[in-house]
Length: 605
Image (cartoon, rainbow, N blue to C red; front, top):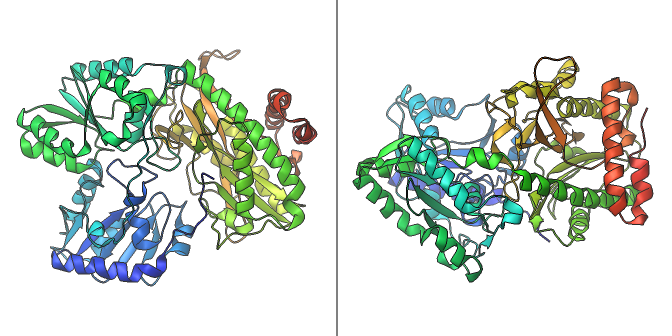
């Protein structure tokens, strides 16, 4: 099994841990300390020794920050995690607050007096993050101070060890471009901007640039590393040498010099002493590196990580791989949903059993490398917890008359998948069908959208919200995120969200996942991955328009669909989508499941 169902949350231990942290604050004359869900690479998913926030608070979500003061503490999370945060933390210790309505800076200004100093680990916070927070807190007379050693690391007993996984090559048959060509493009950009070098800190950027994959982060095939790419000459890859086996060592040494991670700081100091112009991404690079470079005399050149944009534009080989991965995944999902229809009402299937079955269906292909994130297998009211994760102690049975939400994905060498379906267990209520219909309308609004060059994610986000807004409803997460190619299931810079300012371009892959969550009852989310298509003429129009090709091949639950809710174009889109699924999936589906697929994709209306 790639997924574990142990309960990693330990709020019962938080009291003593908070006290220990507060003692460290007192000894250093600090009034507070920031504990983000972060590591030196700004990863969303962390290696075990970097799970400082979870260790301190019990909260296991993938985004958030705790602030511990002498006599108060708070945990700040966005709308995806507020229910989870309140369930996993001790309310007598941590006040769980939802951003952006609640702001960490305002909370600190309220709790602290002028002259207070709050500590932070400069390796875990980005340049922009600290600059913004410093400016805001200064208005209240509060100062931020970097610490040499993370205070959590000082008190964390029996801290886990890093993964020993070795890296593997990601060949041209999957990447579509050689690492040599990618490095050449980065160096050309540096020369154009008169920068001497760029420091890469994002793990997926490093994996993409050098055409390697690793196993240091659960479900994301990356290796812990840093890289310095000079404008001329060989890059240096800072990585544990134990991770570089003979299968990749020779090819890597042709591309780059290899050094241990501990050598990075000396190299940065040398760049500083040489008065080099070093590019850093203010939004993703830890401020620690900017501080070291500037202290030694280097010129910090702000600029986006040069791998982010080209990585997001999938080439022809990667697009072909995405189609192959989704076809394979569609077969697995069809087998799982056919099984679920047979057993869901038995009262014998729980959330974990369903997640295990789905992984088994994916394994049958023989091509599964991992799941792309912990499966969200949520029965009944658990579906309203956006990033719910079932545990052995807290698992819930699937029961007739309820909804079941399954959000899952897979890692194949050809690509990364992510799909969510909400299904009825037994006969759904009229209210369930109405809410499902609204979410389906929201999903189709995005899937069928046509839009001109220059359109940003924030321009399309309202497409998904309008059907819900008209009913007085909404959802507290983005409509969609970018997705990598056998890399991170959450990949920037593109996203469909209120703050999605990046223009969409052909070759980008995003999720389309509107939802509705009725706390204490059920959650509904419908997610497909979509590929941005090149501009094409529109009959009778004067401008070419881009659009989306849906990659995911999984039917929607017809028991929850009332065709009277759908407009003619929505019904046409749905029937065409189901016909495509039947056409592509049925020939390679086991005969036992073909009858289910024919019924699931039969015309509606």
